[in-house]
Image (cartoon, rainbow, N blue to C red):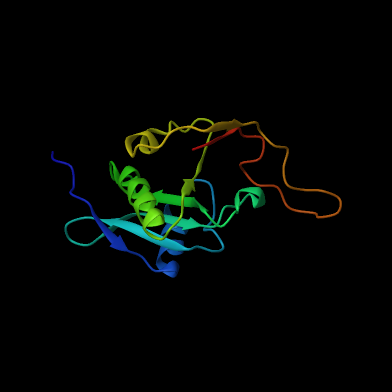
Length: 149
């Protein structure tokens, strides 16, 4: 069986968020974005999306850095690698000098390595975002180590 040929397609914000809501394993759609890009098959069926926005960490939001805040796929092989590479090309074309993303412990990072990305740092698990001065509900990914790419 041959692999499906994938093509890059533009994706509007609403469509990207709906795709993430349907296919992402552990996060809801991000609140904002700078752009989104999709991967579609030969008949035009959307198979994966990448959402790129401002960095979530305030100290990385320097005006020259963007973050791939979500990717989601229906399981189509190589779709994420295609989108990570395309996201970097688009970010560079828009004048950005750095594009980052995170993976969680237990995720291989194969799509990132396949797109030419490299691991920058390891982040220890965090207890959560709740503080007495700013109460917040817990997330399913609290207490999970992360890796910065």
